[in-house]
Amino acid sequence: MRIDVQLAKRKMSVGEFAERVGITPANVAVLKNGRAKAVRFSTLEAMCRVLDCQPGDLLEWVPDESEVEDQAGALRP
Image (cartoon, rainbow, N blue to C red; front, side, top):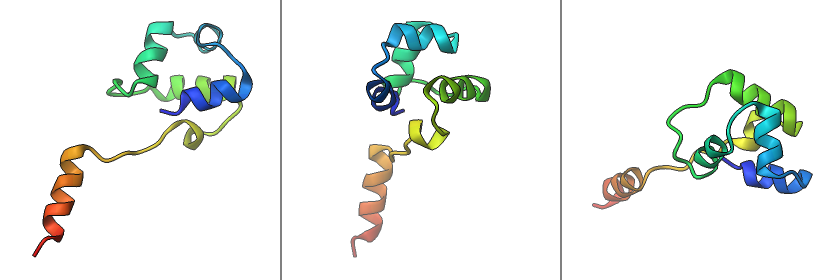
């Protein structure tokens, strides 16, 4: 999650963001640190509404270390 980037662009605090989205600051931390296993579409919608952005501005896919190792191993002769 790239919440920090969007918050910095808008000069918005985590507390203000959490309040406006309707989640706790602790849950914002879970999202920011990549520890969340899932995000409800309604929460994602609220985050986008508050930050005036698209989901792609908040989400970024990064492969797991094991996936990178598997891919590297598959490329070796």
